[in-house]
Image (cartoon, rainbow, N blue to C red; front, side, top):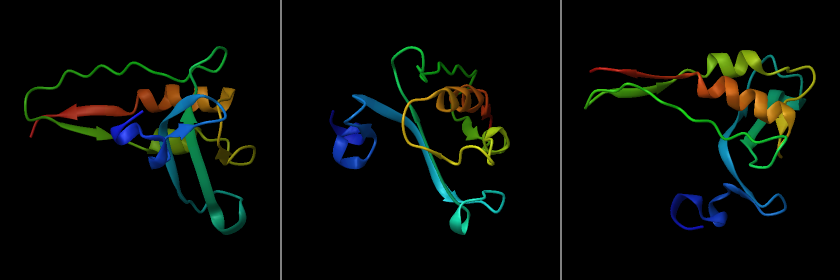
Length: 107
């Protein structure tokens, strides 16, 4: 519980006893919330909502790792859920989408 994962850095749910694996917050015009603000805190390690994903990339030395957020943002069911703050089926589904959104590119 130290370094970047120190609970004081906001990446730990003390009431859920687990880490937030990915956090994205911002403003998106398609979000129906007040001021179009959304919060996606994806995590959870217990069944049935385990969100941990294994990501494997073939990357040569010096490759750039990229994350395309479009699949994640397109995968959010904005009319239903634009604030995810605990382990859930939605967090698990978005974590699966997110895991497929990484790529490696030689420079």
